[in-house]
Length: 183
Image (cartoon, rainbow, N blue to C red; front, side, top):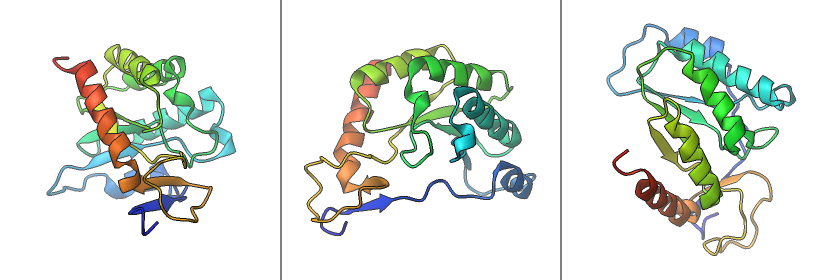
């Protein structure tokens, strides 16, 4: 998206899996802070809430002694089954299970720029009841009706990043700051 200064990302979270990656990183020392970003596996096998939660918890457990902080990605637009954990009840159940794994490392939630303020309010309320230290704003947008998209042909698949999502991301940062300051 050259004219819009954005990218269409349709990568789908491809990787070797938490076991192999954790094994490779275990015991290594890094000169910079290392964040561990966890999303549910992009598979029909993780579509049900319980399977998705178990998938997140498994990965969190594999990395609990690795890295300096965690990002729980509940907003990948390219994941099979959508973004079920942006729903407050489902998120509460997910984070409740993660809370049972002992860690002193900060935990952040990575959220979508496409959420309504009502959805964000519910996510904030759930986060207050759990060991969530903050938010990563934002993931890719899946919306194509953005006035910043000026390119004529944009793929219908995948999420969009770059200048196209900048205003939405900044608005979300501002909104969350106002809702959570001094907390």
